[in-house]
Length: 274
Length: 260
Image 1: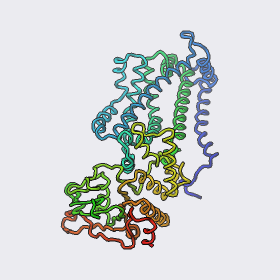
Image 2 (image 1 turned 90 degrees about the vertical axis):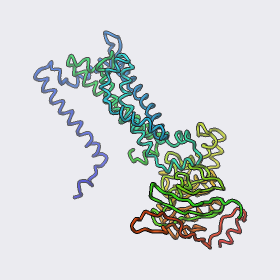
Image 3 (image 1 turned 30 degrees about the horizontal axis):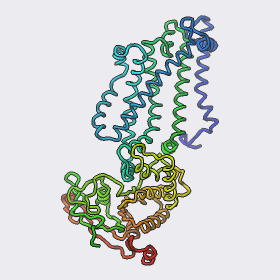
Image 4 (image 1 turned 120 degrees about the horizontal axis):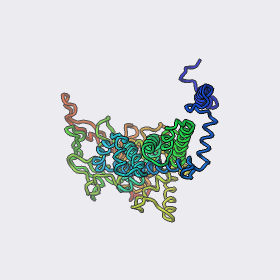
């Protein structure tokens, strides 16, 4: 008998092992749900899959009586717009500051303490300030994501910028590179895949800030809908919405991973984390 | 050889804080010499190389390159190959070589386009073929073996035609067989291009095979109470009779004869 640490599953087995927990969870839910519905057919807490599918399709296809919009799509569009705006602004900010801090000791000395302090502020604590300053419109929600995510991205990128081997800096200078050219051709291309992987990590927090901000003040959005229907205990809407958000998050993550693998093959070969 | 020497050191000393690393360095190196630097670890070989490179400055004394003080940052007049991290991982072999031209010709974008780009790539391809990487132009460094990476690093270091080529244990991490191939390559490049080379090595055989001069670094003075009281210096400056300088004035067939 081999040691346990040397037992590796075959590909087919690995799929099966990966699917098993999902199947168990689904079974558990089905059991509990049908039991509760048998006791009380109008139970709202654990709706049957059929009810959830019905509610989800209704939100996806039927225009809302109040606004005339198909709620699922208008919610999804509103949320993704905020998410992408916030994450894009954060990524650009982090890249610019990360490049400057990583390449220029003079800038690093000035900015690093500020970034460290700002990154320690709990973003949710300043959400009221954002609502007061920017109103309850889009700006406050995007600003929350930016404030919540940017310091993490900056610190991550700066760390990686400082880990570009000194030998490469020297070598590029012996090839005649100016400071600007060093940033452009040495640092920027090596930070891009790092930025993508940092953004993948930060997306979790970005979703958190987005849904929190939408829950407090919004007219549409995935987080807004979930918190709105919570008042009616509408688990048949909440659960599909959560699954939908999870699916969106998964797709965005996979898309970024794909872009990174396509664009920066050398990075994934070195990291061995394809 | 009464003209200004290529490199001149006068009373050069390097100390980190109170700890002297190198002291009393006085030397003169002419164009075409191949100097190998040997000595125990921590004897300042690499420190001297860093001072030549410009990433460290002498604490006292002066280093003159063709009569002018060495700039205190790296530049195109001094090429370098390190033991590791000498090539850019995010560029293919060909792009690694084109990069220097892009730095020189496109200050703002550091990229070439159109005809300029095509010509630069052709030149780079020829240079790659010269070091035996003709088949590997489109590969990234991670797809190259250690020896091929160092070939690429050498070709890259030579693109700007540096006055000095500085090698910091360039073959230290390579297998013995590959190392012999690299010795043949560096010897050929040194002769063909009349290079002036400084090479730090741990391998005495390598030092005597390749160099026209072998510099041995050691501490001349030693205080048993305070081991760090004195720095190292060049204790031996050994000419290697079997090697002739790569002199541009002598036609190359003659060099081959005298070497044989």
